[in-house]
Length: 76
Image (tube, rainbow, N blue to C red; front, side, top):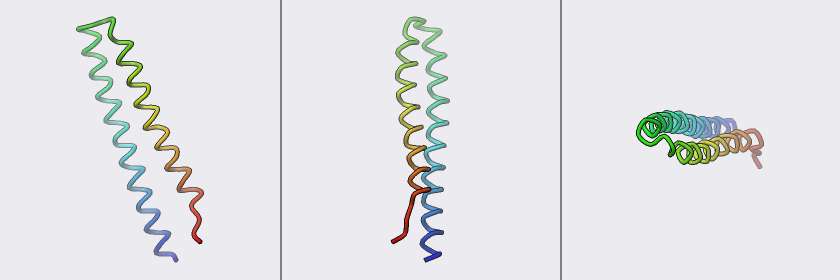
């Protein structure tokens, strides 16, 4: 019983770490693309901002749902 809880904790910790790492990488690349677009096409920054907002919010929702799923995990 205790081993199952430890394994589930390790699994969820791994998932949360991967989501956090993906979110940070996505934010970095979005910032880099935004800077390049701002220099080359100043009017195209709204497109990058909208796509970035959608992507970061989707990753944030996955992160929050993973934490909530871990908190309400029940062992039958």
